[in-house]
Each structure stands twice: as C-alpha cells, then as structure tokens.
Length: 243
Image (tube, rainbow, N blue to C red; front, side):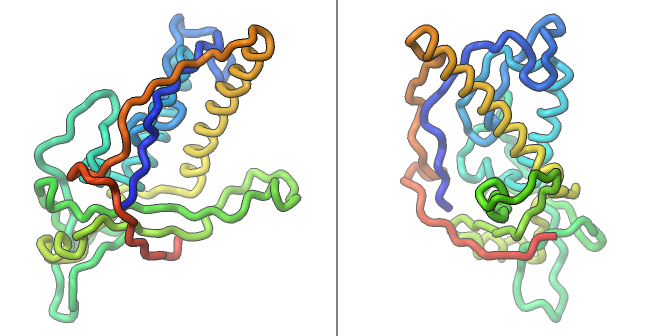
C-alpha cells in the first residue's frame, strides 16, 4: 500500500482568536492540527481554537479516522495521536465461514449478528483502508452553491499480503469499525481541514505582504516508508458502491 507522509512540519503563528467561533479563548486557545495528527500530518496552527470548538472538531476527526483507517495506521507504521503508543493486541470482528463460503472476505456492515471479537497481534490485521471518492467539485462546474454533500463511491486499498492475513482469521472480517459513518460526518471532516488551512494560509499571505516575511517555519521530519522500512509500493484497490 502506498502511503505518502507529509515530511515537513509547518507551524503557523496564532491568529489571536478561535478560527471557528471567533472566541478570544477560555482563557487559553489550543493548537489546531490542520490535518489530523493521527494521520501523520505536521501542519500546526498555534492557539487557533477554543476548548469547545476543539472538542467538537476532535470528535469528528476521531470518528472519521477510526472508521476509515482504523488500526491499519498501526500496520503501516503511522503515529498515533496525542503521542499514545499502539497496543500489543488489536480487536478484530470476524464472522465464521459457513460450508457455502469459499473464502474469507472483508465486509462493511453495522449488523453484528454472528460476529466474534478476536484479539490479534499486529501481523494479523487485514491491512485495508476505506477511501471515499467524491464527485467533481461544483465550483469548477458552475453549479449553484449547496449544502448537500455526497460520496460517489468508495475504494478499499489493501496492503501487500492481505489475502494471507485474511486466511489466518478464517472468516468474514468487519472493516471500518463498529459504528456507522455518514456522508455528512465525512463532509464536516473535510470542511474542518479546508477551513483551518484557508485561515492559516490567508494569514500567512497577509503577513508576507505587510512585513515582507512569512509567519511559519518548516523543517524536514521524516520521509515516507512502509512498516518494514522500505519505500512504499503501489496499493491494490477494489471499488465498492457507497451509500
């Protein structure tokens, strides 16, 4: 599975208020990770969100990241948010095969009847991620503004060796966690990233015009690699309809 990790840390200076509600703080403002830290991103907007907004955006981020990427982040060697370490065992929900089933498989469902919870080591994780595909942006097509957000389809990306790992689990493996993820939640996730980056970038441009200098600093952190330390290979991708 090809994983491209942002290799530069970008730190934006504080905007002086919450970028979501305009609050001056409570009394302190919190650092905003423009792209979730749990996805390996290094874009930080210092003192950019109040406590209430930080809790709300963090809840959306956590739900979306766990639903789409889950423990596969550990399989790919990605960092966990808030400097937490990955556990030694991971929970996987498996529905045993019947006589009619020819092979093990991955499935997405919120119906858990017949599924058994198993605790497995890292090397037993399926190593698959859900990737949402979006229709063309309406702004480029001249479409009128709308609050509607929809997902056209979704792909499942597999890391190398996933078939062998599925065989070890011996059944139909639940992909994407236990809770449902709505298209609106994914839309909020993208909107949060877009809004925070737009505010940070606009602030940087204004500072550059007035002072002749940028208001961020960058430094190289690390280069993208897979969990074995080799350069990542191309992902195997299967398309699924997404409702």
